[in-house]
Amino acid sequence: MKKIINLLLSPKRASDEKYFITDAAEFLKISPDEITGIEVLKKSIDARKKYVLMNLQLEVFWGEPFQKEKFELKLQNVEGKPEVIIIGAGPAGLFAALKLIENGLKPIVLERGKDVSSRKKDIQDINTNKGVNPNSNYCFGEGGAGTFSDGKLYTRSKKRGDVQRILDILTLHGAEKEILSDAHPHIGTNKLPGIIVKIRETIIKSGGEVHFETRVDDLIIEDNIAKGIVTQKGEKIFGNALILATGHSARDIFELLNKKNILIEAKSFAMGVRVEHPQELIDSIQYSCKIRNDYLPAAAYSLVTQVQGRGVYSFCMCPGGFIVPASTAPGETVVNGMSPSKRNSKFANSGMVVEIRTEDFPDKEKYGVLAGLKFQEQLEQIAFQNGGNGLIAPAQRLHDFVNGKLSPVLPETSYHPGIVSSPLHFWLPEHIGKRLQVGFKVFGKRMKGYLTNEAVILGVESRTSSPVRIPRDKETLQHPQIKNLYPCGEGAGYAGGIISAAVDGERCAEMVFFKTFEK
Image (tube, rainbow, N blue to C red; front, side, top):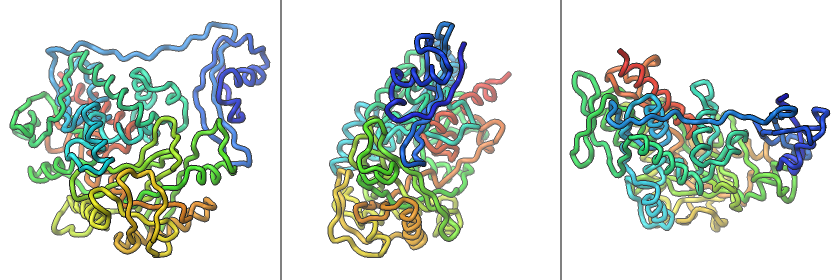
């Protein structure tokens, strides 16, 4: 027999099968020796009461062999098959490539940045304040923005595609099996690069192509049909369809589309700051303890409120993590967060951002649909001007920010390029800064001890999502003007993280197969 059961256990008993197999047997009123296999289906933390507990959903087998169907990709050899160009090797592009291969089409993946190994040096240069390579950084390069900035796998977009399949594919390429059961799965920036390399190897072994340091500078369009692309070297590459999966920071692509009068739309997004606390403080607040139990993970939080008609909320919260420089060009300061797989840093950080709607964009008459993009760019330049040398970020103690005071001395931070005291309350746009001040007061009441000068904010957190959407037909996922052009993923405005981008990549690849090659 087999049965799915739910148990509420202490963190220690939930940590290992040798403990919870006894609890499962007791629940089922059988002997532990009768159990032939047990699998964790879901695992989550319940910290609502004084003592933290773990929710386990288990599938238990007894009286019959333990058998679980093994996930496999149905790959084909696509050498010589019809070619589809994928612009961008982030999760949307890579998972689109795998789906194309399953459908017997040959993906040609073009990535402006470098491969994972070569990209590491450019990341190191950014972290040590040696400058930004505009084509190889935390946002651009093999695997996209998530490769070196965390690898969070949580998504709310479960109605759009098979999230479990994406997790299975990641596990097949080396991710820990815990991502299949954790409520908020996470790979870690130290492990995700190796997984991305294995996905690339799968694509190439199946006959697909992956080209690095190949930036797309133009699209070849004839009679409103996408035919191919032109690289930065002037090389023309042709394909039967184009999947545009360039990510939320490829501003040149948005500008190219606008210049070619290809329809794009302004969309809402969010900007703000990144706040960093000692992880011990967040643990004590969330777990109601002085010292975190060894069987509990570094505590996380999720906060949201409304201030003057706009959402103020935490974004990309990184327990046991680091703040990193996410600029993609000289003269701008952008911060983001990441966590290693063990989440063992002594810091906890999170974006704290304010909803920016299209009616909030300045200079709309001057910039049109690119007004949000220009606003984002201008705020990053202001942050750079208020920072220190190079990528040294402007910073302020949290309580000082809320009270409009300059911080004469700053606390220790995980941000490697360094921080310098700056009056963020003064130079942040008022409709962002004032809302953040109110939001932090609200969050300080919800999490006693959160609003403290032990915490520091860094500016600016501005790459939460794309300020531009590339429209597409709801049925075919093609651009409404350009046949065989498939806007895809986070950069096109249809995803918000690794999983949702991967799901969208698969959907676009499916539509390429059914629509572009339908008889």
